[in-house]
Length: 542
Ligand code: ADP
Image (cartoon, rainbow, N blue to C red; front, side):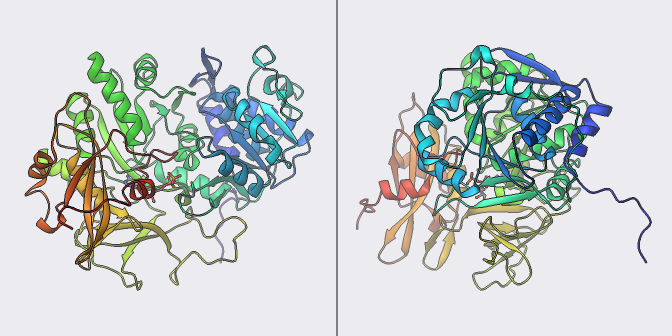
């Protein structure tokens, strides 16, 4: 017997239809790439997305074809997300921070034929367009007045191109399982891999994370996604905000502390989201200027482990609650949030901050387990490390053009490449990437935990821990530190600070000082580069 409810495929356009109907005038504020602040609404975003879908079809875009964007967070990029999927095409967000060769590789691999790009990226595309024979037209996201002279193939200014359609259009009918979006992992090892989201997976994921313990957006929220739309499905915010009817503030190309501060207070932002390095910039700006955060209630921090001093700074100095989140491109991308449960809600002070360094528990639709290398489940005791594996309707089952290659275990779980513990209350704690874990005397040492603790030393600006070869123990931890500009510091004082906070055998064998730690295009510490930089290093006494 079948249920007798309506057939209502989970299509992405329903989200913007809902926002435009029930929250039509909610402000969508952007810092335009051209400079000024631009204001629009969900009603207008939907209208222009319809126009874009119609214009794309007139341009010859076929269902399932990938259309690329190379753009910052602005209203035009938002309407591209809905316009492209509304034409039954696939919105492929390209990450401009990758190396040029990788960008070209990704565009060719995805077979993008049309490319919507911000003014910022015109020189980059001019430099690589010979390597992009498949792209037949570049649409520059600006108007005629700002359109530069360019050698880009069939280049046109978005606004005049868009104006050739009148928006009298009905969203394309698509199967809810049809591809809607595409994002490549950054490919720290090997070629980047294409993750393909469907209409259904994106709708389900946005619904799942919009619950109170997770992103939990409300109509009275004003959300500023600083995390770029080109990184990991924009942390689902382009879907979850209109779904809730929340206002949006889009910071464009300017993500320095001062520019973000101006938007946060000036536009009444209540919730914002980005990687820790972005928040380091904002906190430094606030410290230097004595500024405050007047409307901000919550900050979502993920993409890398959120160090405890950052959580404490936001919560105790600025009255902003921190939501530590974990996810990855393959998870659409949000996997867990560290929100309180009845079992943890009485925690305060030290115990609360100790909890908040964990990445937390998953929403409905994400199932997790930790296993040893042989795939055997590990206990949820908060101490045993295991490979973190996940399963769910918004978790990748295969990569683009590698559909036949199995990436799931026999129970259908995807190996995240992260190593984690899970405690008795179901809180997951990432201890490492599996390739960064330090294996010493047959046991694992968590580099992330040592880094987090070292960041609490008053003279440490940034810390990274890598394993270096040791004849007896296999590997031993080396702590690499960027000291705060004004601070005089020595290794012994940092080691003394760590003493008693971690097991004796976790203590780094040495501390090295550098002026800068290399980061990936998405703000993560680049351990491969660090290991290379320290390849000739020998531990003291060896
Ligand atoms: P990219 O490599 O392009 O940045 P992802 O965002 O998909 O792509 O990276 C996902 C990885 O980032 C995770 O597998 C994990 O290693 C790391 N990560 C994400 N959030 C956290 C977090 N809160 N704490 C520690 N690591 C995190």
